[in-house]
Image (cartoon, rainbow, N blue to C red; front, side, top):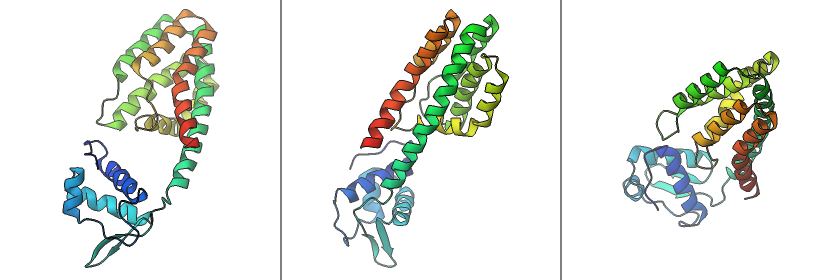
Length: 225
């Protein structure tokens, strides 16, 4: 097993142990190494190992026998169908978000003011790139930037729709902070502002589509995997 980084240790431990189970490192009915051995293998605390095992028991891969230890119950990943369903749902959310973002950018290119462009650049600078740490604060900064793009459309109905779906949009932002779905970088965000500033509606729409393209490509690949 590979050592784990300090970000999302429990989730990484779950994935690492699950991968070993599915790869049949241990046969069904075989006892897993104890907490101390697993913690050393993964370079994490025994408490994190304990939490990972608890989740894998709930997923039907492991079973614990009091006074005996933890044993492999199944080498079939029962969580895989749920993961695929989540990915399909996430793609639907991104499609809806893309439709809003594209049209908002088109309108913003036509209707923006210099003050709106300055505000977008300020919010983008505040957003920065995600480099680990507090996801909640980063998501709030990212959402503030995208809300400002919607606001620059000067379409009140679109603004209200975006606010109504803010929880769904937050989920799409959070998904890009995981390893599976790529997070659009600062340049991709800046390209949208630059395109809006040109006043060319088609360029603005195209910038948003380029922004979203790697996300859709990755989700399509994951859905086929």
